[in-house]
Image (cartoon, rainbow, N blue to C red; front, side):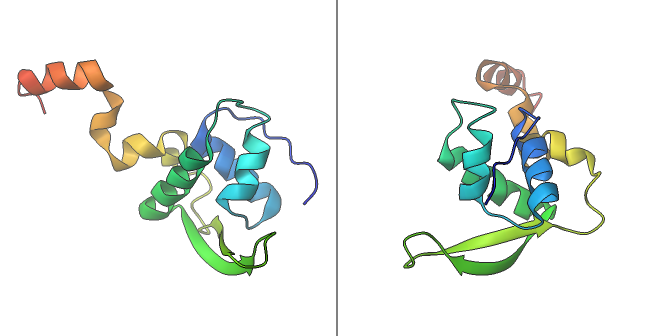
Length: 116
């Protein structure tokens, strides 16, 4: 795969941009491109975002192909047609888990006040 340069720092938008460029791809290829934009990104976080986007119905699995080791198959994904402009791309974790918008301390405070 050639060098992919992503512009977005937000993971959801970066994944959308990545999949628009490559057509179909997986977390490992995305992670390699995303690390150039966000150095402290982790592969676990990249996998989690792909899982969240799949749960939201923004991406779908397409096929499996052998990875570099030729022993483990990697899952490839694509954007579900018609979902390119869905607003959930900018904050997929909040879309799936609305209470995460609070953050740890604010969540506990809201919980004590029985707001959530």
